[in-house]
Image 1 (cartoon, helix red, strand yellow):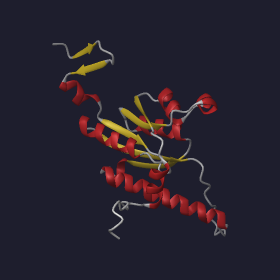
Image 2 (image 1 turned 180 degrees about the horizontal axis):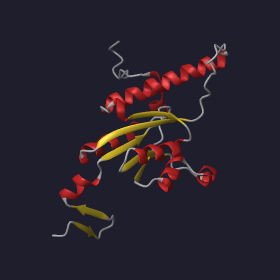
Image 3 (image 1 turned 120 degrees about the vertical axis):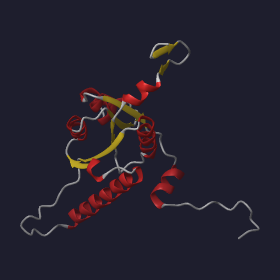
Image 4 (image 1 turned 90 degrees about the vertical axis):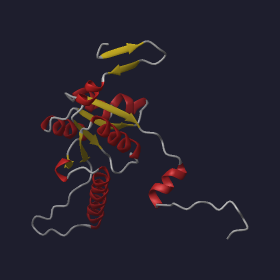
Length: 191
């Protein structure tokens, strides 16, 4: 039997021998945006890393939080203090993701720059086999201008997997933002 067989059906399915699967990806880079709800991307990246027995690394690129100039003891204006707090919140969220995935500290990158450029730069430097990014499935003007996922796809020298992000319902967003975990009591007699 050949190592890989393409079976004609409604969906194209590529059956790959066990050896080819195990040798496919050795190092996966997950690009996360901690300000968005990308648990589905995180779960899929972890699943793929487990399937391939691959090393998993994560990256978060900061591109639009202004940094205060405090090198000479400058007083930080109030709006910059809130920027610092936002940066600390993003750092904390990023560390939680890394901890949840069991990613070694040496395989976590939180860097400043243009997201698509930094993702590709780290992927090349670290010899990444697969980059996983979330994709919003943009339309209209956003589609014409491009996206991080699209730019990474066209500039990376390795495979790129774009996972379409499912839109949250209002209830899901409320639960995520407020940590709401209560279950509505359906029996009016129980208070």
